[in-house]
Image (cartoon, rainbow, N blue to C red):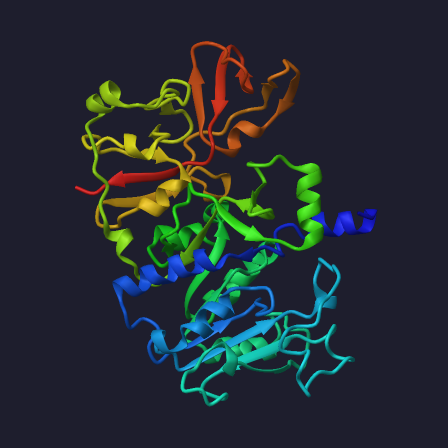
Length: 398
């Protein structure tokens, strides 16, 4: 791989992840189980999509009649405008179409529309998909695609991760229903978390702690094989490299799972019967020093008899039942509810290297009685601190 190709693969690592058909099908079917008519008579827009490589258009086109769709619109981004510029192949729709225009194929986005049985075979499916070139490169921020957004009832896609905040704002300003793939850490963004807190959006059906595998371009696959560890950043399935990501879905469409309350045990029973070997290592039930809460690092350890505030991992969100808990905040600096601000501290790395930092204010801090093993810690005078991952602050409803 050339140096430039290597750089392209690295730079575009999150923007060219193609969602698997199975994951789309599993997610959409959960909404249909809750409301079989959720898509009936609706116009669905799939922006940032490409029917040649993406499975979103395939799924919705093949299930057009089953879903009862009124119209399906899909738009793709011009190859020349993408961060990743690998070898471009003509689409299966372009190759045999009189609409093919060599001067536009690399610089213009495409629009794909499905409304009726064009082929005359008695059903509406992928064979009836009609396409044309867009006037511009297909950027979702363009007036052209924004007009399509305004026409749609529901928007479904896996948007480019590098533009996630901007894409999310673009969706929200239109007040549309949506189902979006996201990295789970997007839940901590200041543009997104307040909407989760206020029950305006929520996590979909895919568990946040489970992997999602994505198809990637050849150059990205080569980069993963050469530079990353199998099982961590990628997996090989049937001899095909699949990128691995801790992803989830965000939506404002109801599904039954989010109204299923967690079965809880008392704090005493959790202390006696928990099966977590790293219970103490994870500082379970330790007070969080800079927030008025206790640390609960395992969702199944949320105590039924504790009525004050607790801090839980962000993976709690896929089990969050709004009838059972209220979300109060998050242990991020931007949220502004820490009960103290630490002075500069001495950071001691795993290798014993010391440096002066301010990092302890960036998340939940816990005081320890002794120096931890094989873990970065912080010193302020003689007090020992460790910092946990971001915690969502919740309280059980009475």
